[in-house]
Length: 156
Image 1: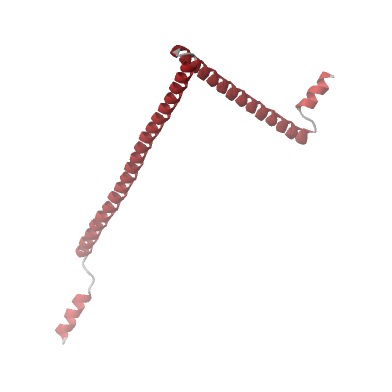
Image 2: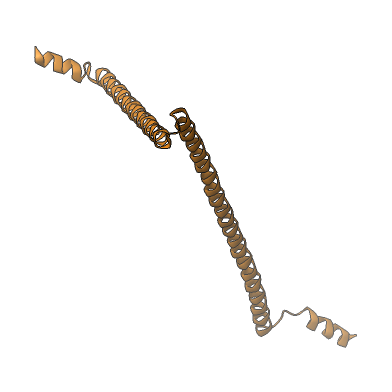
């Protein structure tokens, strides 16, 4: 029975330092392999997302170019038809139909540009006017008077 007892004591003993070190290195190697696998999976996932974004961007650009082409073609056909209709109305004077259509388009574009600039100027003026009014109100609250009051007092 004593030999059996020695055998069980040997099995229950702690592993040697060399064995523990070997096990630790094996586990570290396994952990490194798993970490590398995870990093590669994350990089591949990121590459897939970038590739998908690039693909959809290319599809969007092609679609935008196609839509612009269709729009330009529609405008050209409309203006050509208008010019031809005017040419017939002017007694088959094609040059006159083209000239009136071109001039009309230029006048229309100039009017749209002028109106847009005026609207932008008016909007900017009103925003600045509002900002100055708010600033003067803050001055009146803080100091009991504002810059306009001070200027009117100085003018007297």
